[in-house]
Image (tube, rainbow, N blue to C red; front, side, top):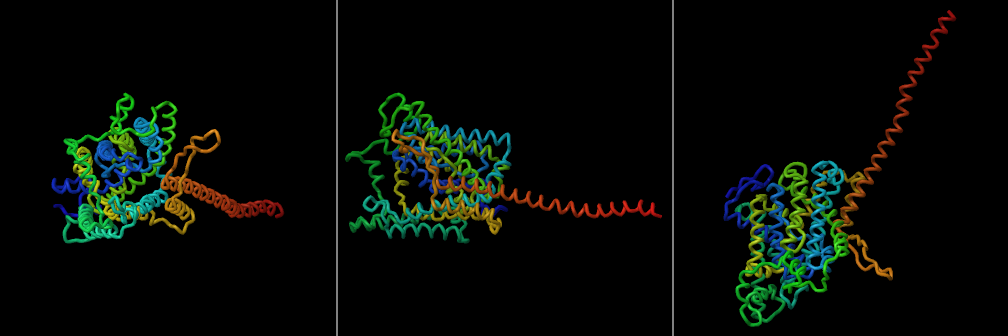
Length: 517
């Protein structure tokens, strides 16, 4: 195994090709890093049966992204949490609403990419300087801290699901410290490259031991793992499920939408959904398009963060912002049509690259293929579903922390003694960590009460607040500079004119003196 550290601090650079055996392990690590968040979105919106479709969409969307970025940007795409509220609106119109919303959001990216292609990125750099991007990246990690800490004390067994469990916390700590030890030790280079795989394995084994003890002692508190997904996959109603227990295609959005339009009986109907109409399209557009503009800024933050990790400027150099936006937008559309949710670049993936020092684009590509294959393999899917929340919480403790620290490093060289920098950073950090959201009403009842709103997430709200604050303080700074120059100008003129007047006076006296003489 190649263990030479590159100039940019990486063991495997973007173009490097690890051995096949290592490549499969690296790819699995990426899959595990993005797994929890990717499958969480369909579960949150009430479509847990679409978890395999979410993985399929993530794999397809990532491959589309890699093609558009010419395999220069090593990051994985997964289900976007930014569109959660938009998805709830779209659910009222079934799978057709989800697909239309995703297409409209993706087109926003495409349009911005075309503008950047012709106008360049200078305006983007002025709008989103390090003083804005840095704290935004930091709050992306910090805002997820609550999710990680909620998971690390949670068991998956039905009897105690959702409550605090000290044994689960212990399993989460086993996961966390395994990742830390494997990443920091210098003796075995292989451990440095796959700390998350080893951490999840150690945490799972620990949870399994406690679960078996709990089953033997009939003590629910020790039942950390819920094995029912495995049982239900093979047996239903006391009978073997059949071939679909081994191999089954995901019910992705396109198939479900066709069934909706054709009036066929759906395998997974969305309760309460109505047929899409022109007013429905408008409602979905209002829900998705504004969020897409906000996610655009998060896209830039992710790529600046990734660029700092791999030592390359992904925005201004190769592949360039226009290509990353096209890849993200079209990849998101593809991920929804052949999956279930709009996609976005994942901070967990960036964190995995940074901690393992493995930026090989082949790892990302194989991980995408792996997600596609896994979405059809039911036994593997159900085993992955049994990974306890506490184990994933232990992993996320490192991943989310890295995202936060990466953002802090982006503005560490800024002079925070200057009020113009201090106010921008403060506004973003406090608004983001405090959970400030903007709820925009778009449907009002006859009584005047607001019926429906679009919620702009805390990260997006903090980013917008930071951009506006930065523009204001820079405008004030510019006015102050112009005022200082204006005040300095008259004194400068006087200093120059006074000698001129004295010279003139002495010169005017010379003829008079000559005349007197």
